[in-house]
Length: 277
Image (tube, rainbow, N blue to C red; front, side, top):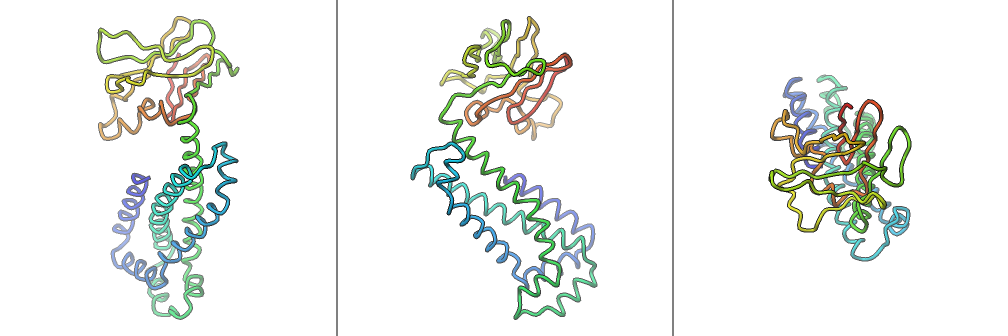
């Protein structure tokens, strides 16, 4: 989430610098006069209150047993997530308003603004429209984050499972000559078999050292397809975040997906990658 916020701030900053500092400063000034941050904060607080009002039903819908410990964890998560969302929403609203209004229009709004009627000023300046555009972009991210939060809670209470599809048929057990192996950077170590072919559960020993993991091998019909932990051609700064084999993907996900057809073998954890056959 923080990386997403940093990206939004950078994008807005670059756009505003290119189009003119005066216009950027006036857009910010108008937002401050109308108290846009306060309006956004109030809106997200109302949304958060609505979510928490139905908290127990939400837990039930997400198949997670409610208790005070889980409730605190969820509320802490929601506080942090909405705080980050407020900041991103403000940046996107400011950018939308800046891009859709001329310098003269912004100056006229500042000169004619009625500080005694903030709601009216919020409407006639066009800031409400810009906020609606920003919220339309951001609110789905919030609900998606809530879904991921509950998915992670469920994953922590259950085994990691494999959803395997071969030639468009989803299988409940692995076929013969199908296996998953983790490969080590230590050449003398044998690959570690991690799939139970009957239960379709993926597991690694509690003391497994993920630092030595270099790749995952999908073995199917005597053919081996190797998915590297890191893309060697990628810049070092993004190798870890783009890896399909991050250690937390063995703990915080409910399932992995593997889809095999005549053309390719696809692996999906949180990151999706494929290898041609």
